[in-house]
Image 1 (cartoon, rainbow, N blue to C red):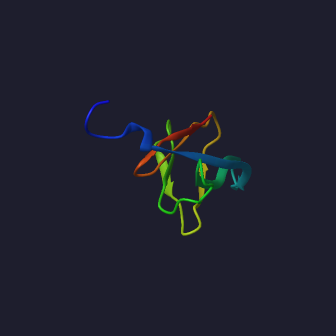
Image 2 (cartoon, rainbow, N blue to C red):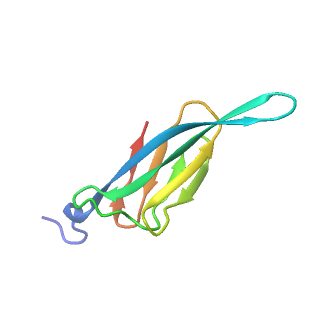
Length: 95
């Protein structure tokens, strides 16, 4: 065993998300976007994490979870790769 940081103490998080297709209409043409919303939780206890960062890897767009661990992010359609991070936890990626 080496001295220093205890790697076994790093916690994991779960990113639970729901995709919702949102339609936006303009006078010239219709535009489509995707709204992704959900919760970030401690993987072991299920406790929702306040202030966790959730972002789409390719779009570089992100939000912070609210007082209930909830987030909502509206993005252009396409391949979505979401990542959640929180201080003291391993990041979780949802593809």
